[in-house]
Length: 243
Image 1 (cartoon, rainbow, N blue to C red):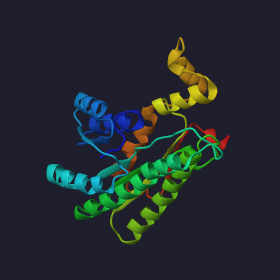
Image 2 (image 1 turned 135 degrees about the vertical axis):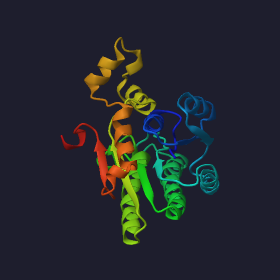
Image 3 (image 1 turned 90 degrees about the vertical axis):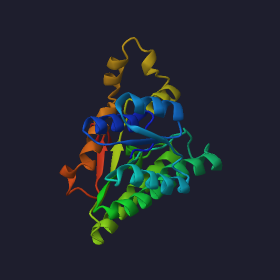
Image 4 (image 1 turned 180 degrees about the vertical axis):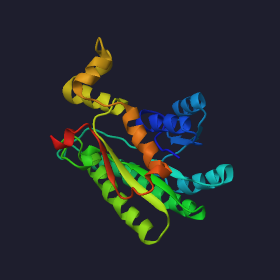
């Protein structure tokens, strides 16, 4: 199951996991795009607002009835409004935290209950390099992603100590070629990648990664090949945070 899968990183994750043989459920608030994309490559789409706790228990019932088990969850849904500490309003702050932190918390809690019934599984929580470095214009987003980073480690230790055979890791992309990053570049730098004569060359010049760069990591962490990787933060930024 992948949340926020109608576009961007979630969509790339869904496509790759289906290609690797997984039965994938995509969720999103964007019904039209989600249904269309899922139909293209053989996934199942279900509308979901991840900040709605009740939606999680209902989804677990659907998954158990339709597939019998849940082996992997990717908590990917998120938003990234641009606002610094002086500009951010309380409503936006709470909305960002509800989608990222509440959504990830509800998802992990619900998934663990179902995964325990079938001997284990793997959870991947989408964080960001914003959890590792300061990004002034993204206060709420940075705070939420930092919370996801810490939450992931706590869940991983809990699952290990209780011998649940459930792994929980976080993934931390930097700038990736998604609508979210396009919006940031256009708003903060006046750089419209898609309006350039050669968008691909512009992407390369700016050092921006591709969605599949993240999807390959997610697929690995979901797989049994990553059986000894737990509580880890996987940074995908081509070294940006170490320069």
